[in-house]
Length: 93
Image 1 (cartoon, rainbow, N blue to C red):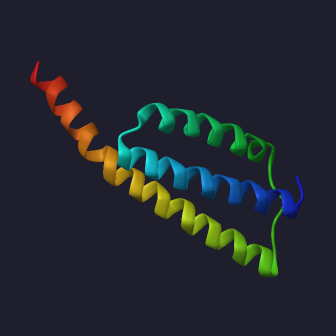
Image 2: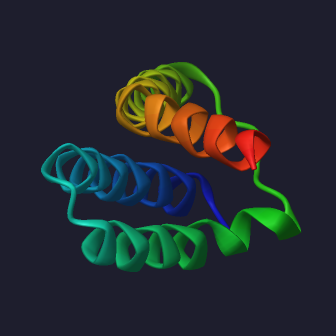
């Protein structure tokens, strides 16, 4: 995996998590699950390690990571209240 591959992976993940955010907000859990599986597949090469980025490529990576984190937060804003309700329901029985 070279520096361009790393940035392409993060760009793809940012796009996928953006789509996941929209699916979560729409309550389209089937689409959300499919996008989640695609995101996992896109991220799989990172397990083998990634090269260190420098300069403008490093800044681009940081911006993409911020976008990924914002998408994650938006997804959690939708799913956390539901998770809490399920947890309370399970503990009540």
